[in-house]
Length: 114
Image 1 (cartoon, one colour):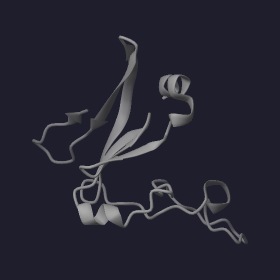
Image 2 (cartoon, helix red, strand yellow; image 1 turned 135 degrees about the vertical axis):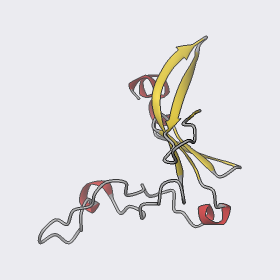
Image 3 (tube, one colour; image 1 turned 45 degrees about the vertical axis):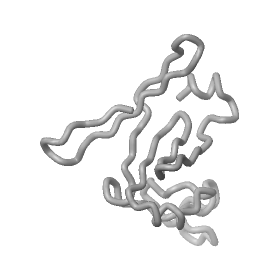
């Protein structure tokens, strides 16, 4: 992640939505959404709540709202979203190459690199 941040600066963690319902969060992950109509309803201005939420006692802001803002609901992996996580990055011939990995949850199905 630090290589992408060093080279890209402001575009680190920037999101790009591609035509095939794939979202690149630069330097972090690639997400593919199998249901195209589902993607249209997602609010990409909010982060997905992928962490365990905890209520802050006597707070007007539940959980992490005070530091992370309101997040959108967590999606079901491999049903609503197929996620690839950044595992490596390197500079190759003046460009940054990023490698993303998805571990298959189905026995007998191959893991995937992008």
